[in-house]
Amino acid sequence: MPVSVSNPRTPKYRHYKPKNLGVVRINGHDEYLGRYNSPESWEQYHRLIAEWLANGRQSLPQPTDKADEAPPLSINDVVLAHWQFAKSHYLKDGKPTVTLESIRVALRPLRQLYGSTPAAKFGPKSLKAVRQHLIGTGLSRGVINKRIGQIKRAFKWAVAEELVPPSLYHGLQAVAGLTFGRSKARETEPVRPVPDLHVAVVLPFVSPVVAAMILLQRLSGMRAGEIVILRPRDIDTSGDIWIYEPSDHKGRWRGHRKQIPLGPEAQKILQPFLARDPQAFLFSPQEAEAWRLEHRPPYHGRQRKTKVYACELKRRQKLKETRRKNRKPKRPKRERYSTDSYRRAIEYGMKKATKVGFVIPHFHPHQMRHSRGTEVRRRYGLEAAQAALGHSKADVTQIYAERDMEKARQVAREMG
Image (cartoon, rainbow, N blue to C red; front, side, top):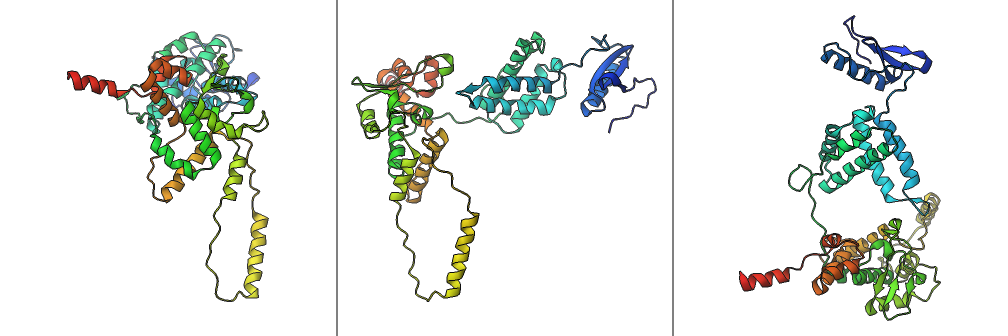
């Protein structure tokens, strides 16, 4: 319910009927508040009255002079406009990319905290309040910095579309990202290479298809998304070193071309999968499922010694029919793995290995890319690791390839 104002001299909340807007006249100037009798318009009214009283009942800065001027854009308006743009922009082959979902998640707290606030009044302190809210939810520092960056980019787009003044975006740019150890945001452990021993333990507990994917990723250092879309047509086998050019990759939207060299060991892994349609995917979940069913151990239940009566057989048949009727149709296996199904297949192998007594720390496919980068850097240097991982900048390779500490140990041994 709106709060009543007892002071008779306080400007009243009124109805501007031609456009169904709430309006309040302050010192002879009309301030439009949005849709009449909406919670947002009452929120705006009470805020204006409070600011007017705090200003000694003097005129507010930049009053509205035109009675027919539209109400200012709110944060909700800017977010909605940016979302409509993002849905048509962040597409790849006609399908939404993962960036679209990350934008939606990043803009959600902005709407929750400042949805009805005029966009032009959203400043650095407001952005810091959103960041503090994200810290309170338990998100890690890296995730918080990424989401705040997406909010800044939304306002950058709004400036380009002349929805908000340029000074707003410049002010938001002054809010620096959270730094390590200087905030209450949760810190995460850096991604480390996975030991080859842990990878070797998992291989016997997965299908040959998944095992080939794991070994190929470990040898080549390619991303999981590049493994799952591998097809014979994408591999140039004319030379002694095969060249795999993915049909889709992380930098394709920039116009970059990705080529992955495959040496003799990788060629041995791929050889059994090449005798198929050039358009077909090399690693098929359907083949993995067929192998699993073929090698499924037989059921060795206890042999029943007591007689099975007719009433029990009838009950079993009735239960079987009920289950068949209520059973949801099982989704058929797809033609290729996704990055998620590939990760789950590896996790399935880890669980099976754990059941028989192996102790394996959890790892994910991307760690094998780190392992490849670290190995190449140790043997051939940073520049070679940069080329092997397909990075355009060496500082990105620094993240993926662990520093070789053996040289530092040797220096300490001889000089220190």
